[in-house]
Length: 418
Ligand SMILES: *[C@@H]1O[C@H](CO)[C@@H](O)[C@H](O)[C@H]1NC(C)=O
Ligand SMILES: *[C@@H]1O[C@H](CO)[C@@H](O)[C@H](O)[C@H]1NC(C)=O
Ligand SMILES: *[C@@H]1O[C@H](CO)[C@@H](O)[C@H](O)[C@H]1NC(C)=O
Ligand SMILES: *[C@@H]1O[C@H](CO)[C@@H](O)[C@H](O)[C@H]1NC(C)=O
Ligand SMILES: *[C@@H]1O[C@H](CO)[C@@H](O)[C@H](O)[C@H]1NC(C)=O
Ligand SMILES: *[C@@H]1O[C@H](CO)[C@@H](O)[C@H](O)[C@H]1NC(C)=O
Ligand SMILES: *[C@@H]1O[C@H](CO)[C@@H](O)[C@H](O)[C@H]1NC(C)=O
Image 1 (cartoon, rainbow, N blue to C red):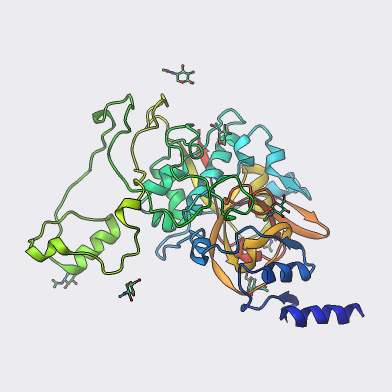
Image 2 (tube, protein in one colour):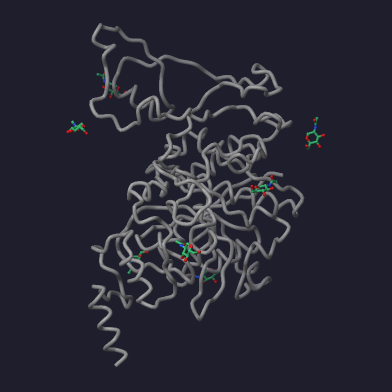
């Protein structure tokens, strides 16, 4: 009888069985009630709910998935915890970095990336903040600036249109990153410049709806008005300057390797009328001022930009091994992970998430801060960056014994230079 009921529900909802797991058909509309109902009908390890308004444009949803892997990126050196270390300190059944380091307040902070595919930077700076506190035994509390990283790390990717985790960690090591809290917090040197918004649409939140992806904040060399340090005192210098030979390949390579170049060119009268036929950008009247990448701290913050920078002493990846990751979190704190996102993930509300559809939607970056077992299902405890209206108050649990959504494949972390 119960099997019959189960079969009925499978038929009704058009689900299919594969690899011992019941999956939802790709043809179910992502934001529909049917999708949510179908997930809950499966009575699996997690519950779905409406995180995103039904009218949310699907591109807005996908633009939150801001991991863009650069193909030429070399993985960070692999950190190996040897078996003696692990045996010396057994791994507990359950671990939650928030409870393990209760004095490190950043660990339990859920950030909001806003209308920006900056998860790669938000998750990285969260982990950096956590580890600075952990490695200073709770003495140094700082929110590392996602703003600085997303706007200024040109090797990382394309800012709000996505970036690379490994590059973000390298930037931390070589360049340093200043402090900066949430939007409008006026905490630290460079607080986040894009407002918090309701990723749920207007469903239940206190924040305005997110709307379209914001333009990537651009780099500028201007000092913020009212900042007390002189511009010249903040100047950086090139180690060498050069021209580029008249060769297409050379110029392409130069732009690829070192960024844009300055050129002059001959102007004919028609040039003034240049206009894209059907631009993707909003009209100028509606455009918001671009938040600059500046080398200055916010007005009123009395530490200089360079004095405020934080660095890693070393950075590394963690092997795809449950024990290794547990040990790493226990010893050194939360880590940044990359997640393959399937369409059902958007609806996560509670329980232990496992993907129930093959409808791959993109790659996301999150923080792993602990683990445990819920109703017999082992899980990783993770923090998302879609503010605390999403999921389980901003958090989610994900199945631990299956490398669920490839969560073990790109684990990155570092030790702060204190
Ligand atoms: C919004 O709030 C109402 C009433 O508090 C609740 O019933 C509903 O489930 C909430 N919706 C979401 C998407 O959280
Ligand atoms: C994971 O690492 C631990 C500790 O180094 C080791 O004992 C174990 O064999 C590894 N597991 C796998 C599946 O490689
Ligand atoms: C970090 O940001 C949170 C949230 O805005 C804030 O409560 C906390 O005070 C900040 N920490 C520091 C050290 O500024
Ligand atoms: C441009 O430079 C590339 C790389 O140095 C070289 O292989 C190519 O022959 C050059 N092309 C021309 C037109 O000189
Ligand atoms: C440009 O936009 C107009 C109006 O939206 C549309 O009718 C037209 O097909 C578009 N042209 C191109 C080349 O996309
Ligand atoms: C900088 O700000 C801190 C905290 O507000 C304050 O304790 C300190 O005296 C200030 N230092 C200077 C030089 O103004
Ligand atoms: C879930 O994700 C894995 C990869 O992590 C993928 O191979 C699989 O097809 C997805 N769907 C299901 C139902 O397992």
